[in-house]
Image (tube, rainbow, N blue to C red):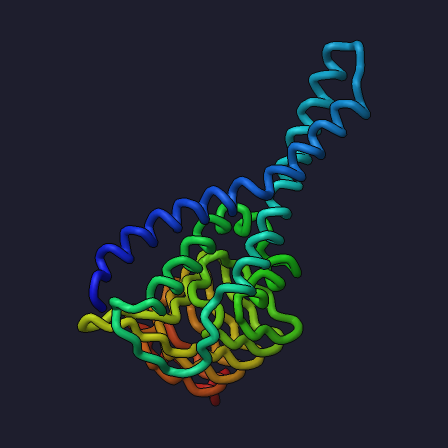
Length: 237
């Protein structure tokens, strides 16, 4: 793309603007809550006043984080890539810029999101970002990249610190590849799942495993290691 370096530089400025929005707009209801709390629970006693101030600060922080999730949901719903199949685009493309912009919004939101996993709020955030999440899913990580490429089945458990990544860069191209996690899958703590992975129903991925790109894991099998390999047959479970 001609003049891509200039476009990328302008995009970087836009990303800084996105940081100001994602962190700044949710602060308004938090400030309003703090002011209301201080006025409602004013006390002439120093210790009570200090207690009320502490509660005002902590509750305002919760309001701030919830407001950030809601605002980020709105932005992600509007802006996330509508990609549901294996897609390759030039690294120097407007699709890349849009993807990077959404990625920055996600990174800005992650410090708040990590306090709400697992919860319906986290699931709602990922759904707004394009993920397909069935009932009963327990998502214990804030490290899901490219949610629009992720399909999670019923009663799936994803352990804390797991990283699910739906993109990669190869030979000057940005590659998006969907990830499917079947019903009843257990993904352990700290697992890394690469683009294009398909995990069959009832499978188990052991903690700290790294599942390479495009790997297909059959139903009911147990996999672990770096890179992940089958360590138990489905018939042995």
